[in-house]
Length: 151
Image 1 (cartoon, rainbow, N blue to C red):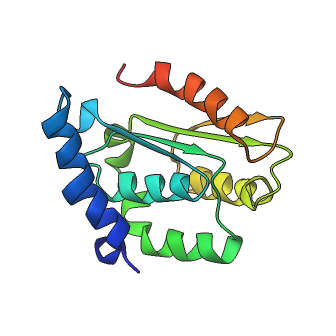
Image 2 (cartoon, rainbow, N blue to C red; image 1 turned 90 degrees about the vertical axis):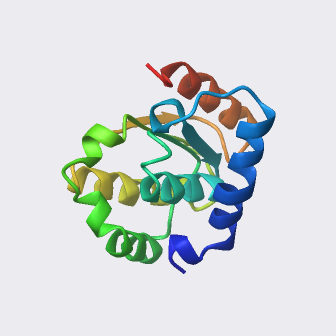
């Protein structure tokens, strides 16, 4: 499924984001918009943000990762974006955090994600903490990620 065929992404972009901008006082534009998620939502945030750099300039991934075979498919599908020379200017912040005791697939597979990012020269901040796939870590990550936004 490509991001344009993904119903979650479509709903997020066409329903959730307009609702937020209509309901709350928010500044518009990619420079003032970030996306973050935890676990599978972190992987979704990465794909949505990467494919919509006209809307997002900052991405946070909390305890997110792909199995190596799935990551390879992601890399192949996103190759044009990952190798785009303008990515460094458009993506102002990519922040990743994961716990070393994360019992999901996140921690064991994070090295593959980091290698992919480094292989494409994508600047990122990586935070490794103790702990598992829990709210305790996600609150910690949000606390570290949020002050870096919109600088």
